[in-house]
Amino acid sequence: MCTKASLIQRSVCAALLAFAGAVSAADPPAPASSAAAAAPAAPSDAELIASAESAAPPNVGKHATIVAMGADGKMRTVRKGTNNFTCMPDNPATPGPDPMCMDAAALEWVHALISHATPPAKVGFMYMLAGGTDASNTDPYAAQPTATNHWIKTGPHVMVVGADAAFYDAYPKSPDPDTTVPYVMWAGTPYQHLMAPVKTAAHAPSPPSGTTAK
Image (tube, rainbow, N blue to C red; front, top):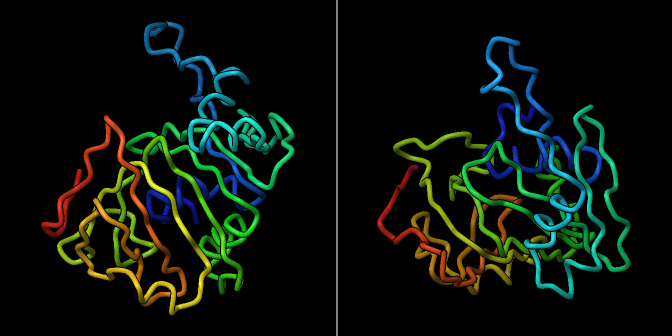
């Protein structure tokens, strides 16, 4: 299922089927004759924690549970937290930095998305302050840009998921949104949610000029 998911979903798919996490397993060892092409060393726990914490404000990230996928493909808790948030480090398989930090309701919402299930009627909140990935703004399950799926890019942002439809009606729902202001992604689907960009020095959001692709 993960191989057919959108880029956003692939960044959480494997881990959120169990709970959350996004560190790819190490590549197979390179042939002995190609030492230069050897797989990079797996990130240390300190690196995983730093990456995961970067998704949220310091006072959220430093108290959150940090989870990651090990080289054996199994989930593990890198650090047990003391608040309601779970953070995961960047997934190197996706185009840009995409560590995430979610409250419990947002974790349930993403699991429903991946499972093609009805999202819970719970308002959830998610931080992606270090960046985000490209995605279709109209098809939750698009894996790549096409001429009709309104591919866009939003940089650092926060998300509100699981709210009543009336909440989302207060925000723009254009398929080709201005990503410099809050807008609704996947409008009209069970998975519509608010995307609220957060400006940073490194953030270069896509203009409201239609389909864009990497």
